[in-house]
Amino acid sequence: MKKIILLLSISLLTISSNAQQTANLLFHWQDTSLVGSWAYDNTYNECWGMVVNDREIAIIGSTAGTHFFDVTDPANSSAVAFVAGAYIGGGVIHRDYHDFDGYLYVVCDEGSSSTLQIIDVSNLPNSVNTVYDSNQLFTKSHNIFIDTATAKLYACASNSAMDIYSLANPTNPTFIYSYNDVGHVHDAYVRNDTAYLNCGPDGFRVVDFHYLDLLGGVAVELASLTSYPDAGYNHSGWLNDDGTLYIMQDENHGYDVKILDVADLNNISVLATFNSGVDPQSMAHNGIIKGDLAYIPYYHDGLRVFDISDPSNPVQTWEYDTYAPNSHASYKGAWGVYPYLPSGNIIVSDMQTGLYLFECETPTAIIENKLTHNLFPNPVATQFTIQNSNAEKFTLYNSLGAKVLEQEIHKNQNTIYRENLRNGLYFYTLNKKGKTVESGKVIFE
Image (cartoon, rainbow, N blue to C red; front, top):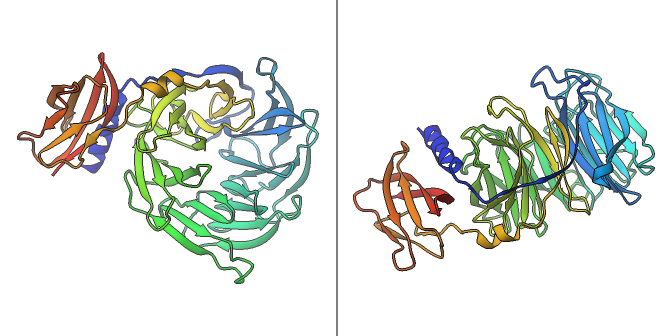
């Protein structure tokens, strides 16, 4: 029943026609001669971005290796370098990237011949030079993250749940510590030795690695979260600039993205959940926060951008579907996003259709017209009020999707009475001029 309710809630969100705009496509690259993976027919995987010698560089992984593009002038973007993977072909599903001190670090999660590759990119856009290509430290890793403040590389799901390496010498990483307090770390975001870990079935953890040297290799767990809305396979996340918000994706069909309040690690809370609004089976992948925007690549649904300036009310502002048809079966479509180029242009990778570069201008009109979640109180005993809303109609649905209540809304008529409705979970929409401008859940108790 829980799963049925979940899918219903998302299907109601699907009917919402949020005022998002289509992003402007600046550049697209795809090489149809490359093979797709045997598992998901994905030719491409993660993307990354860098600025080298005042040139904006877009990077994408494929079953063949790592491709570099100069996208400084989007209309004249071009491939400028390529590095073959140590393991290539149809067995490749994942590659991952991070840069530090003028080097790009590359890993793959498949193949007995895989390696850690370190590529000197200092001569881009003219050429690159692979300076390290070895499995001495590890053969495979699912994801990597580099804490640039402390020069440490975190390799997830490699020799152990997660291994930490010093980059004091960027071209000669040295092993520091293996973290095995959980069975599996799928992904990590690390800032100043504090690691926000997405641990698959073990949920979300925050771990302090400040004391590895002082105490001879001791990791201190600061917080954990295993029970939360739409808890599934805790896949990936990203911390905002001031360290107060964390977006988190569970890689399950139909599960929402979570916004966590992590300002107080003794009291982590979920401020909001949201999704693309496309299909009950939509699934978010590797999201990134930049400023007040969350950039979420969705399997099947492409790039989705959300304004999270009010973290309790994320509003979708931009979209671009990179993959069709949208059957929402298996794992196909957008994989990664990189929003940090100085130009503001957005890099996106799609598993089947390759590299994209988008422009998303500031959606002023959308931000000005957004609504907040205005039902108070919620849960509801006898009645609730719709506050600070310019919506015109309130509609309520039961857990089977049947309409059970509908009421016009205006300034002097904004109180909704429960009447004889039973206890339980209900779903609502707020409409203006025939369009759904907000959707959510209401609990009657």
